[in-house]
Length: 214
Image 1 (cartoon, rainbow, N blue to C red):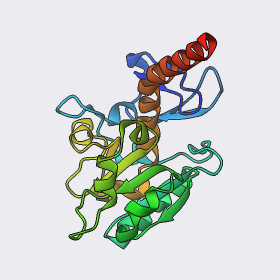
Image 2: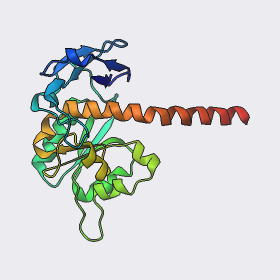
Image 3: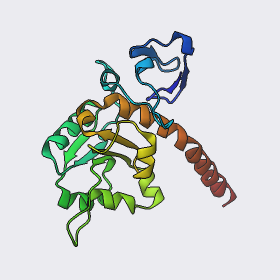
Image 4: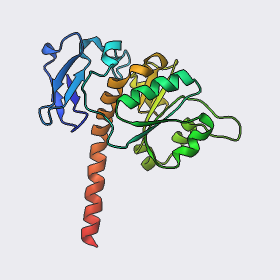
């Protein structure tokens, strides 16, 4: 089993033979952050995508460091108020300053550039208006990379990578899991950070070399 520390991105490798059936905790060898792993109870999805998280594996263990940095903001916008509250509770536990924004205002509020996380449903807006999901899908690649997008709804299977790819999201959640998806968000954000790290480092080196040449 392999994982990445959500704090410092250090790769953690564990012999598959030693992985228990139930979720378990390990310490990052570099920064000592406690990382909860799903164990064998989170079996791979049938299509080979991301793991299907068990209910226990979704929950955040007590005492785990916040995922968000100081002052990081998350926007939550759903037609269903109960789903919005459940999702907001999860993101608040992860350390985000969370705003629940009505659907008619969400796309406009996103333009303020205050948010690094957005959780919404795959819905269209009324004629002449734009939903948050529609606004996110037409964002430039640079702007889109700055926002972690979660889509939640009854049509999704939590952690299904193929579904997330198809709807241009970083993570999809079943509605019933929205209020306890802490660990799923941590896991996918760590993987996203690892994938983007190559791009970020290449961009930094290019910008530094350009400055030197000038």
